Length: 285
View 1 (cartoon, rainbow, N blue to C red):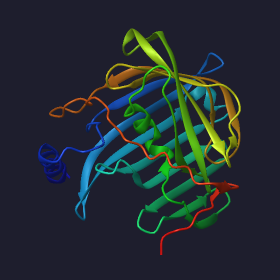
View 2 (view 1 turned 135 degrees about the vertical axis):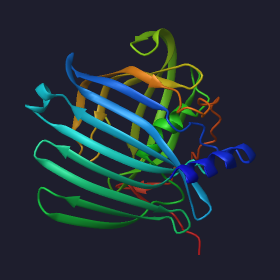
View 3 (view 1 turned 90 degrees about the vertical axis):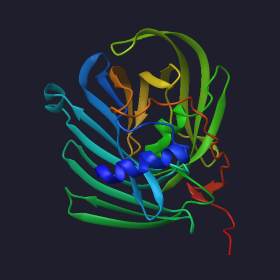
């Protein structure tokens, strides 16, 4: 693994990647629900790997409720994504999630050449497996790379964009609108000016996720220092309100790696028409 990582690092000198975040970058958050401490979230670029001539970032995210909150409703999630360093798109994901008495193991593989993905979901608590082959249309991001894509955009007050995104057997439009900055305090950075990034989703051209949410983003690396509001869980339409995730620790990079450089992403913004989330389009021959 060290040899592979060294080879990828050496290749980045001659051929810089579009993905601007380094090995070892780690963000850790304390999560509360209506002010009650609920657990921790961590997102890390674990390593770079090379396979069949392509280079990937292996990203790992974990979500765990604390002991007190788990007594009411336990969440223990680990998700992994392999993001192409040169195309800035996710090619494979795997998520193992425990939500209360429900236990899931889901993997997704994207094939850009055919515009199809293969998803396999094991409902371990029911001993059921569901296989899905889905035409995701001209292009689709995965929810795994949205955090990094958001940070790689030229964010400024008034900026707005929507991108096609696959989740739960549907293609959505994931939108962000950037509001005015204000001073936001975090344990990791102290008090800093941060931009208000407001995410939302649209399905079939109509608003999908109700509620209000804002992600406060700060610094040249566009680090999310706090999330206030709501999230929609990936396995259902259940809306979780009253959440706050506050940055408590930030590691810019592993030893020997440069911190994230100034973002410069050119995202795909073509949103195909959809019916119940299924793209309506004319694929190439």
